[in-house]
Image 1: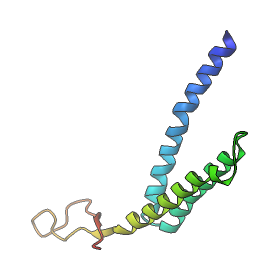
Image 2 (image 1 turned 135 degrees about the horizontal axis):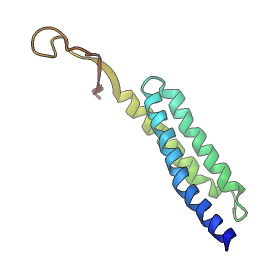
Image 3 (image 1 turned 180 degrees about the vertical axis):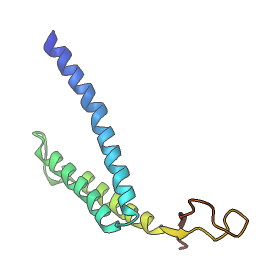
Length: 116
């Protein structure tokens, strides 16, 4: 009875912990992409390689086709991250943003989409 309870608890922790860790890493890669697009895109590709390796190492793996979803998703994700990070370039805040000719206290960089 205790082993079954411990196994269920461990499974729950894994089911909640893995998505939480992946979300934190995804946010970090997104922030990194604003200054280092290639490095962030490479991070997404690394996740795809890890996923493909996990799929191929399963006992019921039938071959390279099992890795295809991870590889395709990583390629698409890296491309989308790279393009969207390119469009989100830093744009200086306009002088006199407070309407009185002087920049507001703490005025810095605002992010605005890059025109296509």
